[in-house]
Length: 289
Ligand SMILES: NC(=O)c1ccc[n+]([C@@H]2O[C@H](COP(=O)([O-])OP(=O)(O)OC[C@H]3O[C@@H](n4cnc5c(N)ncnc54)[C@H](O)[C@@H]3O)[C@@H](O)[C@H]2O)c1
Image (cartoon, rainbow, N blue to C red; front, side, top):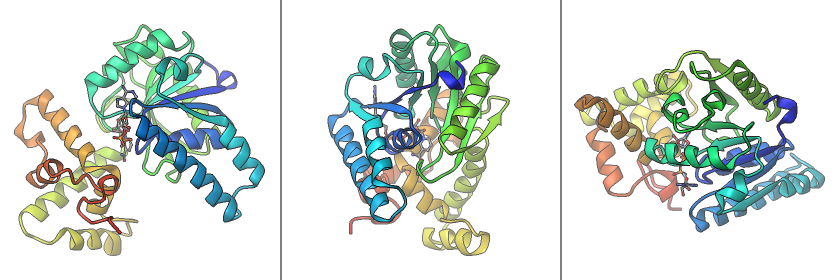
């Protein structure tokens, strides 16, 4: 696939990441179809698109014309066949579960045109573990956006050993087209570049909390006021989702059997209480007001 041939984009999963990736692509002129298995999630995503575009017009950030074109560029459906049937690029952003991702990629391999690139937005899972569920491994790669996807510029393009140069280059060019700053990661490592760095920070922050060294509020303050981070690790955890942290840790543990990979007790507690962060109205902090 060459970048000039990319016109239609399919996003699978309209949650935290998927709906914003969809909108970013639509704002950049791509025709986007976003799909999810939960109708309420699709409705929420559609409402977000409308209110976001109206807000940008009101603030003078985009013209009425751009808002109208963008709105016309994006549609939502519960049917994967409709969403991916004519796609040049598919970006999967469903839950961080390897079996689910492999199943979706196997389906996409049957549905999407043979030339299409199938990318995963997974936070930690390298695409070679998913590519083997398809008959087009050279066109399957990681395309890792950051939260919130409309705001954060970085996208990690991971060129595993199975990924062709053409696919990697097309994805690098695609990121530039959608106004992002891509980096090319030339070796497959779980978590890629930035999440590996953040994982160390988060692990240390949780350890200090659980040892009673400081409160989570003060640990966040240390990172914000001492290191200049825009937010501390606990606030960031609320934004990215405590359920995601739980899934990532459990995924590692199930593979390695190493108890050190298990989610920490305070993450397990939040997870079992259903306190996932901003998305549920409460995590480390409360968002109920
Ligand atoms: N949250 C973050 O900060 C962040 C950042 C970068 C990457 N990611 C990655 O992006 C992916 C999605 O994360 P998220 O935070 O958006 O999760 P989320 O839970 O907010 O959304 C996932 C969505 O996938 C949908 N889904 C589940 N099965 C599906 C299927 N078969 N077909 C279509 N949709 C399906 C769910 O209904 C849900 O709406 C994960 O792989 C995660 O690792 C997340």
